[in-house]
Length: 327
Image (cartoon, rainbow, N blue to C red):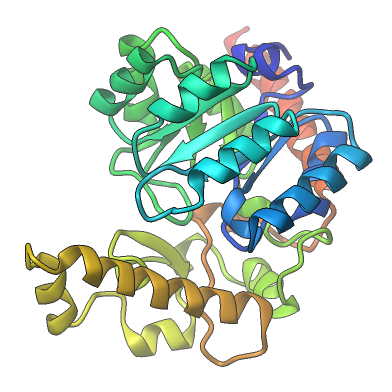
């Protein structure tokens, strides 16, 4: 299948394995690339610039196929410029930018022929990044795992397609081949899929986290503001039920105070990410696991190539069924 995304990245299938904080690792990126899709890993998953350099070297030594890096481009990421330069040095195929203005990333990447896709949740920002020279937008909808958008894909994708000339990649809520077909039918040029790849043999998270993605489903996903101050989806474990999903009155007051809300949000984010990290990699009763509703379709722990093969097989069956229905 050829779409604008497959043509831009030189991949077989119109799928990006979404960058997942703490989850995505080198093994996953290599497996995704070899399976015919494009994996993307957050730069922040590498502790230091030296670790990033080492990781990029390893990926390049194990596959010659396209992969990307997710960059946080707001002021909270003090290493953004060094991360950008290191990635350009190693010839990554594309960036996905999040949480800030991508202008500097776009300008630097154009000199190297590196593609830049920008996370967006609404039309105005999509048009801004298009004007800056972005190669595509990641349309983060209300079904996304982790930090989610406000609009369903059925509204967001057609809206962006009608307002933007650059490719639109739908992100959120898809874990089946028929789901892929539905996004393409809406006009999406490709998909960013994350949660279905959490419970894979290649990922380095705990067995408990993987098992939770198998055992829990769409109805068990809740939205919390306790982790970062922004809306974020997690599995509704007993611990999450115990601590609640809303900030307490003191946290809300601090995050609304003009003088200190910046620092309050930074503290909330730091504490939340440490909580997620502890649950992802260590045995703890404090189980706060990020995931989206598409874990509904995770029935067992598989390899990434097995998941890609299943998705594409399901996609082909869904297309055939549609043709039969339409006569």
